[in-house]
Structures are given as C-alpha cells and as structure tokens.
Length: 577
Image (cartoon, rainbow, N blue to C red; front, side, top):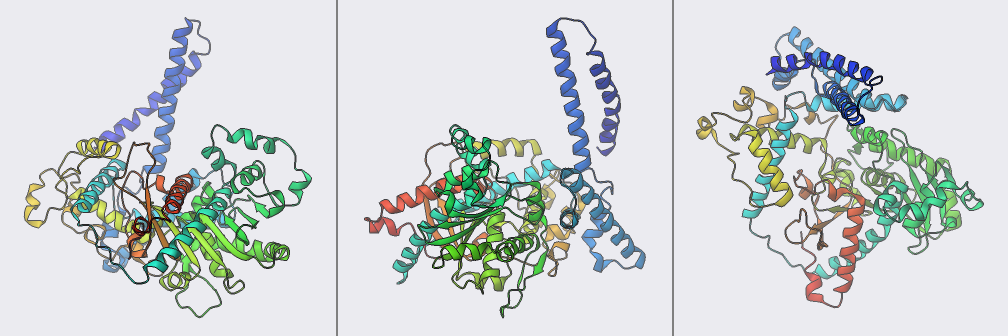
C-alpha cells in the first residue's frame, strides 16, 4: 500500500503541470461561454485538490517512517545499549521537530515572540509524545470512535437505573442547587458577552447586525471614552446587548489577544451587587496554542497547600489577567466606585479555567471572591487545589461536553480504548463507518460488533481491522494499559482535575439527534470522578457551545421556577451523589 501511495503521489507532478497549462490556455481561448466556464471550473477544482493534497501531506506525512513506534513501545528504560538510547533520543527530538514545523505552518499568520515560541515547543512535544507509539490513519480513528460510542451505549442500556438515596440534608442541598443555578443563569450572560460580536451575531443572525451595526461604524463617543480598554471595534455594542448594562457600568474592556494573553472585561453588576470579571474562552489560534500548552507548572498562592500545580498555558493566561487587574489598578478603580460589592469571576471554556485560577490567585486579597466556571477543562488543577477550590468555585457542565472531560491522562485513556476496540474488531471498516454514520444521525440499537474478544477467541480474528502484530500480541503500552507511556510522566503531565463543585445538566429522556423540539434538562451536584473518562456521542462538541449552554440554562431555570409550587415534582430534579 505504501508503494502505491508513493506512485500516486508522483502522479501529482504531471497533474500540476497540466493544471498550470490549463490555467494559462484558458486566458486566451475564444470558445462558447458555457464551455469556457466548464473548463474554468475544472481547472479551479484541480487546483483545490492539489492544494488540499499538499496541505494534507505537510500535516500527516511522517518522515520518520514509523521508526519511533518500536522504541516508544519498548520505552527508554528497556533500551540496553548506549547506542540504542542515543537513537531513541534522536528520534524523539526529530519527531518533536517535525510536529513543531507542522504547528508553525498551521499558525503561520501568528507573529512570533517569546510566548509563541514556547507555545509552539509545548504543543509539538505534546503531539509527538501522544502519537509516538501509534500509526493510525484518520479512518482508523473514526472507526474506533464509532465502535466506542456503540459499545458505550450498549453498556449503558444494560445497566440498571441507579437507586436514588434520600438524605436528611436533601432540602438544604436542593435550595443550594437552586440558588447556584440562578447565579449561573445570571453570570453566564457575562461569560457570553466576553466573546464579543461574533457570538452575538451567531446567536442573532437576523437582527444582530441591525442592533450593533451603528456601534461598528461610528467613532468612539464620549461615553465610550469613559471605559478603559483596547480594540473594542464592534464588541462594545454586542456586550451592551448581551448583558443589558449601560456604558457607565463598565470599568474596563480589553480584546487584546495573544498567546497566554486573553481578552477580558470588568463591569459593575448592580443587580447582584458584584464586580464581575469575565474572561473570554477559545476563539483564535493564539487561544488554541494556550490550550495546548498542557504541561503543569507550580503556582505560588501564598498558602500552606502542598502540590499546587496547574495547567501551564491557562495559568500563564490567568497571571496576565491578574497583572492587568492589580498592576493597572483596574480592580482598585472598580471598588472605589462600589466598595461594598463582592468580586465575582466568570468564564467559559478556556476562560473558565483562567477565571478559576485567577480566583485562586485573588483569594488572599479578596476573601469573599466567587467564581462561576462554565464548561471548564478537566486538566486544570492538582488534587489539593481541586479540594481547596470547592468552597468558592462552582463549575457547570452540560451533557457529554468533551472539554470538562479533557485532560492529557484522559486522552491517553481514549487512545488505549480506541486501539483496543479496533484491534478486536473483524468487520470491514466501510461497514463500521456506514453503520456509524446512520447511528450518529438517526440512532437505533448499538450493533453487536465483536469488540472485546478474549485470548481464547483470538483465532477468530482472521481479518482484523488492524493487522499490526504489535497490537494483536499486546506488546504496545498504549494497547495493554501499561504506564510506560511518556504521557504518564508525573512531573510534566500529572493527573489534573476540574475546579470547584460541579453542577451537571443532563438531558431528560433519550438524546435527540435531528429532533428540533425543546429539550428538557435536570440538574444535580456531581463528583469529579464522573468526568474521568471521555464519552463519545453526537453532542460531545455541541454541548460545549456557549449558546447551547445558555439555552439549556434558560429552559432549566424556567422549569424549576414553574415547579416551585410542586414539591414532589421539584424534588425529582436532584439526584443525590
């Protein structure tokens, strides 16, 4: 197969020449207009295919030719000779260099500075380490995810409903849940406003331009000058529309966006008597590089906690916002206007992680600080910081949202599960993918694929989906569950946890796929262990979208408010954990 791919790749050279001649010839030809348009379309499509192929080769092609895999499977501790150890280190450096080149090409529009170079290096090291002991193509991964989703649903269908245990403190927990849900519903508006005009236009495609168009075209007015900040452009109008506040209620708005430097806003919320700091989530290539700087680093919080480590990229972003708030006097200005107000930090996704770490940094200065983290990443805090944050941070997670389950250790677990399930399946890949597409779109019963064959039935795998001997003989650490994987390095990639207490919103009844009817949601307090594994499903990405989360909160808060007079029905909204 590899030889055929190289031959096919060589044929692209005459295709490039042919497409170039076609582009030159069409400029001077005099033919029927329909024929000319057809030829132009053919030439354009040819160039699109060529460009796509070149980009794919740059991103996917491994110049090491899979030489890294056997050494990664053995691990550096198992290499006997000094020469073998040197070869392993050389291959590791080469693999990191290849990934760094890919990342730089994909992010070529980002200007390089010290932070960007560090982020490139961190991202390249993460990718090279994660993919070092596997050699999968995208269709293998798609088939594995399809099989995992069906296997996951099959197990869920066979499980008996969990027994609901009643406690004497149920009434107080229910009241606490109602209060925090109302707070989440209120402060989510600020987290959404931090995204600026793109999210507002996305949520209001027909009326959004009309409502904020004037703010985009006119120059800054005197009212605008009262607000500190930079690069407001069309953002201020959308922020006013989303929050319902006035110009005078805003202390600072910044849309300065670089690697490890996030946009944020500071406003006075008179309804809740709070100074709100909202940090924007992922919305640019710079933000993605911040997300992917996944090593851990120590936090100096000035407290007696041990093992104070956190996600490197997000902690760097939180430090940037901290310096702006304290050194630039932004918080001092806010509390000089409203000294009796309390400090509340909010954010969604990356912004939720930065807001949670910012709350930890400000806890000593502002003892009554509160933080509401919407869909925060799981790989954020060490165990001790997670326990410490429960007293002043509340996280909100919707459904099967992948981000609150996403960490380096969880990704390694997902890789192992994918390798295991595809190595233990003997159905053709096209059948798996076709059935998987139907299942994701329309649902149905999970197909009974042979995905967990034991050693006794190993001979049944005459044509396994993956025919690689290393997988079938269970020698790869990524396959057999060994902790030899480089991603299990406790110093660089320790197990990290989400922030604070967690409210989990779940959709009632079967999860709809193409159904447009309004969904019904329930809410309950959950333990972090419920998010210790990535769940596969059609809504694992859409459940993370801020507009979907806002809609779910709207439905849930209105439903619970309508059920205040129905104690029996209201009590059913909360399951004890």
